Length: 431
Image (cartoon, rainbow, N blue to C red):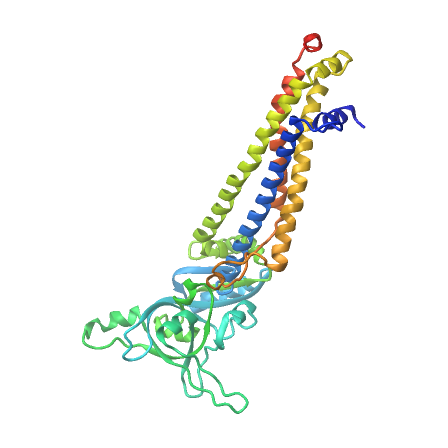
């Protein structure tokens, strides 16, 4: 065994007795272990919440969106759709229309609601597992019936608040019942009715076909209709608000965005269209979540910093206690550099043991929570999940390990330099 490693180990742990220095070193190991385990668990939970919020958002929002001020004419939308559809990684491209309208539940309803109305192609969400899971009543059916009525899908919370019931088909001989009828009044219709202030603004009527349950912000504010219905509602003629792209891999969004921007610029269309990824659509929310993640990391890293201060104290006490031994080793020819390395290795040993224990504890708890969900959320219904979500990322774990080991070695720098500066003759002569 290398003499430096042998000395470092023997100075930290004595086989004959448990000294105060050994106790302080043990506390340093425990502090590093607790800090590393806490960082792994907290960052994994933060990552879990981030992934849950992201998946919740992109279940209705696209992975990439192409928009233009004032809308995109039909011919241009068709050309851009063909361009985007040829890109690698793009699963589907669909046009949409979006705007705000007043939702009236009944002719004499006292509770009305301003909602964000999104017009999509009837088959745009076919095969979207997230949306199929989110649809809690009825079906995501936006088409017109034989009788000519158009369909609408609302958030479950909004439908419940307005007392609306979705359409239920007849099954196994059991009679179904029609869905509630609602009216949408657009801002354009309100402006057109200014000339007739005593009349009700004209609106379009829809049959409630289904309800979806996502987060409260979506439930209370979003409604879906077919694309042609939204074009008529907002008087868009043949224009669309933009195009929505869904990808095979969500992580390819930035690469697809860059490729689209280059190709649009090559055709002289860069100034007319804006390309937004799923992150850009909710940048404020994701930014806050990332800030919370790294803020919590810095706070928890203080546990490791405190443990590092213990390492400084314990190693300094070892230097003082072993000064005669250090002087003898120097007199026997051990260089100052190797003496310094002995005490740096002591800091590294404390870091390795503490980090290793923290890794086992932190990863064990994170894997157990992911597998069993034994730590429940106190208000799970409000979050649509019952337990804390967990997502372990190798990069985060690697950064924690490097930071912990780096702090432990850094804490050993002062004791190592102090030991290396001792003069052999003075060290040996001292009692």
